[in-house]
Image (cartoon, rainbow, N blue to C red):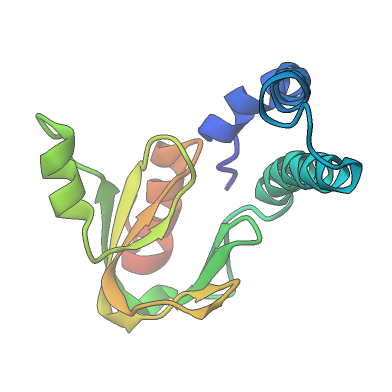
Length: 168
């Protein structure tokens, strides 16, 4: 199940060349016009490294979709985070409820494992026992709630309900 299409990062990538040009102009004309050449090279190198990281992150979102196979649900957040959950551990799956304002949504989402990307979080999984995600910097906090971004929430929810509960 893919999730890169709902990512805000997807909308950001086409304007990266313009941002790169603007970044170079800003650094050269405003911030570093009289700086040492080595400092200018380091700053531009870091900016280019950041651009490459953004492209690589999007590529990892495309290369690592969520998978439901062999009684396990493997959720990915690109290379940044993953969660492997046995299907039998899933108590419920449903769309994330809508909220009147962002403060209520933030309070509702607090404490949940977020396997989403910049953009809308679509699906909420509730687990029988707490699971612990694995991230770039090690294990994350355990929780019984998982928020997942997915491009086609209806088919994702139907597949999990079919495998978990035997019903669509």
